[in-house]
Length: 423
Image (cartoon, rainbow, N blue to C red):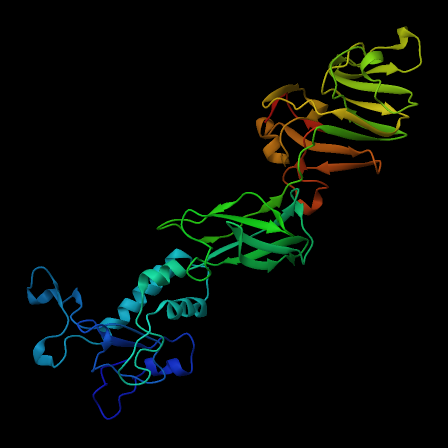
């Protein structure tokens, strides 16, 4: 602001005087840090002042060509009539803003200034408007910097329609609110997450930030970073996840062809397929290890519900076998077998009909153990009679689904043999 406080025109000089008209200009006055940070009598004052900072006897670098070793000293000297100046208050404010920006570089100038002004320590005494919002509090200003999170809001790893409510929740407190917006055919969310200083109960280092979509928690969560960790987080896609099946698992049969899983104990088809809603005609199991008629691997084994034994080529049904049923209509409920973690199946080059027994996960995460060895995942919707597709590498909006779900049935096209481990 200038050292004009004791002159007939004590207002700030330029460019600080521009602060009255331009919100991105910050006019800095000096406080007397040798006297409880009261007004430093040399400091200019007036309505343009935004903030004050200590200006007396500030240790700084000095001219190194004077032969002084080390090249540091205190500003001002008694014969100058004051022991400092606004020139040494201003760089402290600049340093404060540098620290705030390093904490989260994604905010705008007006946001940094508003946070710094809110964190400043109010003053009393002295001429009017000498300190603006007060004397800077660097620690409080830096701790006030919010977290910003942006990315794609998903439900079961597919885009949520625009308008959905998105919140940042910390220990049950809503610390940031927004709505889903559309970016072309994709969705986006942008959250400003308040610090504990700005909104009690909100962000402090180490706290867990959960994004919720229409009240449902989405994953992964975010940890509020500590010192030197950037609070500006972009490209963080989060998804709500449907719960896994409970004690009973219900599968739908459409009266024509249905692709389902056997969830009971292993046994002969006549004994273990008795929970399929009747009447039904035939069940077909695709055995990837059986030789086809052309000599390649992969052939359907069959069981007819009312046919002579010599027509049956599927002698044994194993738990988690995926198969087709013809003619059954209705719903069948089976006890949840609660698949063991880490169940592994061998998949062969070509199509494989598989019951997925891992936790609900994004497709690429669920199939991580065969990454690079599959090109397409299909799922047959027994209710609509439609095929759904997921293809790695395509834009999300071109896929019909984005996740794999416990005890649901999928077709996986393998470009090479591989072992699928489902956790």
